[in-house]
Length: 490
Ligand code: HEM
Image: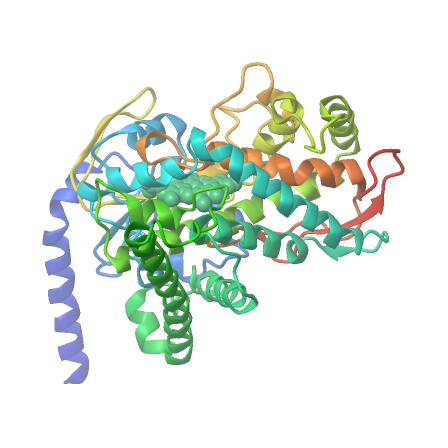
């Protein structure tokens, strides 16, 4: 009896699902994809996907089904995409802007990545303002101070012994990004909470138990409580900062003549910009969402880019040599200002090539709220239907032999003469508003490391894994030796 009832329910649910997705299926008839079981779809493809085997599996998947395919899981239609022509059309469109990063909702909800599409443009413009001309030079001053701090920490490690450079680099990046967003140096506790929260989300990513919000709610009560506590504590800090800023502003207006001027910082932080924006009145929750979004993206993506760049340079002696020669020529001698970043074109190319091979954000997602009509020189014309979840795999896309010659080889020179397209900061209206700043920051942090230390290729090679960002399951191992160059001592 129970078996019969289960069977009947299964048939009814399958039939319902079949009719519900009929229109979508008719539009994607031209796409290949894995076998679709009734109701469950191609669940088997997701079941055994882990952070460690993601890259191997996605390469196998793409070679079997092509760079544009379809994959049903229950009623959800996933479109894995690794084609430059189509990705460009999608990312550059003004219509298909929803990201649909459900996993991050509790933490980043209210921020630019997840806000309603009618608010998105203003939010994006606000954040872009943080990295605008008026503020960028001051942010670079701050970055240089942080680079000095990093040098001091690395000097303690420069004994030719293998260590994981992520452990040293990422706290420095975290501190800098939070200072830029919140306008205050983070306390040890704040940094620890942000780091721990990132770890929780990195653990949840691609986990069957907890990637889906419903499963997470059911299956991981302890982790969920911890996650929510961390979000609450961070947002309490943000609310305190908001209150402090607001009270200072009121004092400024009311008591201009009685009080000594409030000491001004030499840069404007994101929080100030959000509070003082004339066009958009943001709620406290939205402000917290923006701070969380920038802290999360800035901290994890810049740390990943920097660590991959360091281990890559350590393992390519000729690249390291050329970087050092360029740095010697670009050093600003009479001021203690470091290097003229404009003259570091080779280092710039090394960074771009590193991010081509190891894009810090591997997947860029779009959730279609309307059909997306495309034209493609090979696949032909077609429509991706409303409701599809498109996942652009930048790792595969930027290693495609059709677009990049010797695609799996590190060749920084390709970014010198006629640079190929780099999608690691995405493209189009929703591309990263911090692209220029991030490149300058990374060069500012890298230059003194390369000038003061020789990077030694000791330890194990990276083993790629995907936990929210491009990472390495065995860390970023290398060793350092102080350079014996007069004038470059720390
Ligand atoms: C190497 C460093 C970085 C890389 C590779 C990077 C990459 C990206 C990518 C691929 C996107 C598109 C996301 C999507 O559409 O799904 C993005 C968006 C964004 N990035 Fe970055 N990013 C970096 C650094 C930063 C930093 C330092 C900040 C701020 C402190 C930042 C803030 C943002 C914001 C706010 C968005 C959302 C823009 C929008 O949706 O309108 N990023 N970034």
